[in-house]
Image (cartoon, rainbow, N blue to C red; front, side):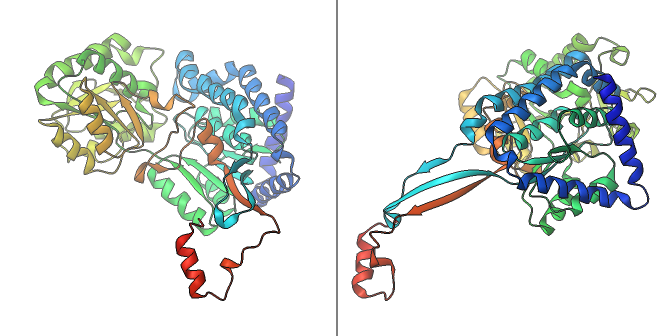
Length: 482
């Protein structure tokens, strides 16, 4: 396998050299044209072909697991356990679900005919869009690349994957892994930074799936609109935790600390800030500190399994948000390793810079509120978040908050875990995104449903044809045709 990988890398490097001096645009053009030709052959529409590709992807991930783990450690300092739990294992779970259900999802669905269509047979046929583009982020660079790619494959599309240049080790690994498993006319990886993204977005794709920031999501949507290309946007936002005074404070703190500081806070659904009922603010802060120390000790920056910030730009940005804030614990960073200690802030003003943008780092502001109505108003006054977490033992409170506030998805008495299921869609609303995926939703996202009515020649009821007489009008009012 290693010698094969070396040969593929040589071919890739040679291709990269030929793209210099204006050749890059031609290379992207050729890649898209090659995928269009392969899609037109009809091979990808065969369910057996899709299942074979998914099996190949699953087996490839298992063979390359050590290399994947090493690349994740190189880019983000993730431990093997965290890499498997949050990336490799979840990708395998998604692929296994699609292997089990793709045949069912791809079936034509018969539906009842209305009286106006009688006698007829009505059905909904599932068809792939064609040539798709998946643009993935750097924070979970393996998982958030291959989950949507698996959905595109299951639905019968060709796919070009563009990983983030901010995670170069995983980007190279994905290039080599996909290059070993699939011909570029079917599934391909193209690397690069902003220039590469811009070149890709000049192309006409049949579907674009983007995961990343709100700012770049707006650009993707704008470029897609030029070709009327449908998009899924998985974005982010400031996801709140609401902690009621009747919550199990110790368990709430434990689960919030897990969700917030996973991947050093670089998670799109990480709790971005806590709203805590003022009667329990002090004991809750003590619980947060206790669990941070239980998980990472007194010196978390010395822990070999504590992740780092992706680069100096984001390290400096997050450290800058701490200026002038009161820390309960943490607040220190080490630029040489790009690590920031798990940090909890207290007495945070709603107008502070740390409350104006998604933190995307290991910093948790804690604010207090008096009544639940006050907390609801605070959340509702801001852009709709990707996630919301509520901690309470009161079922009426659960019904009230989950029914009243708008957000992508979330948990009651936990964090993060709502995205760990192929049986529920995952996605945002408003500025936190549009569209969803996971499990059947992944298949549906990359599938066009084609509605078909197959009529018989006889009888051909004259009621719908001109001239429209008073008698026909009366008959239309009496009979429900639709």
